[in-house]
Figure 1: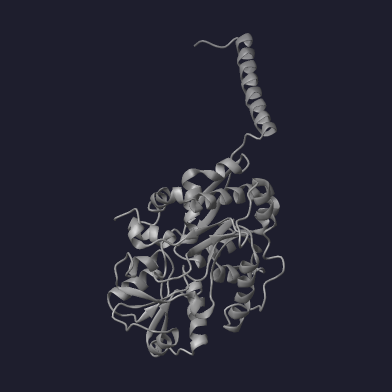
Figure 2 (figure 1 turned 90 degrees about the horizontal axis):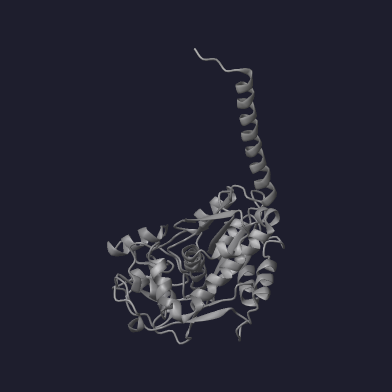
Length: 385
């Protein structure tokens, strides 16, 4: 049996020493130069909600990679309702999320569990996204909101509880003294199914489910009978973010907001409409492209006189702030949240305003917004399916 000489053994020890030295130097260099495993964070959104369409654009185009510092990785996680996004944020599973003002207010009222801030607006309308009453297709033609309200008395009505659509119906009931026979908590999918099986008289839902089941470009199993103007109830979408993420990762938070700004600009550009819908269709599966297009770019209701379907301000202007202020007292009165007002620190668009200024964009008159979407007729839709 061959044995190693002392010289050979010493050579092996030297080679091992050199190899370990190389490994140590590599890790030292990696740490010094910032080459290390990426920190992964999650962003929650609703693919079946137009307030999240620009999130899909952000994910598909990888805009966040352009603006966030190196060493960060994002994963966009879809959910069917804002309350699911909210629960994930409270549990620390997501650092940011997209939702309407009602679930956002409920979320931000729970600061004993986690501090969440409203950091940007993702879109607002006068009540044409989720503040609408849908009635069954054989319902009478109503000449006024008061006539509709009278018909709704004793009827079976549904909405996803805790959603902006729920907020709208509650306000509609209060304004017109409506007493439903049943007011059910149903998801948007169940609402669509129950209209098909004639188990519902009326409901409120949001886009694109709204356009999918209504008679403008959808199945025609329901029709729009009233919008947000019936009870001065606008729609507002909000980007919320965990305060600890903003504090511990300020440059990443700012970079993500910059990518959100670019995604909103992309959606607002009329030249990108078809490309936006092609991207969204990958996530909002089962919904025809013509419906997805109409849900964002269509004229809803079809007889609406104001041509503006939606506007995106990015930061909070007075209209957005006024809307936010009305929600907490309403939810407190309805015993949905424990506090009558949100804490002063909750609404904080300082980073959004900083990002907007550094981007060099000029606000669009008359409302100092990033831009407007003007509703188009159903026959103008570029998609046939």
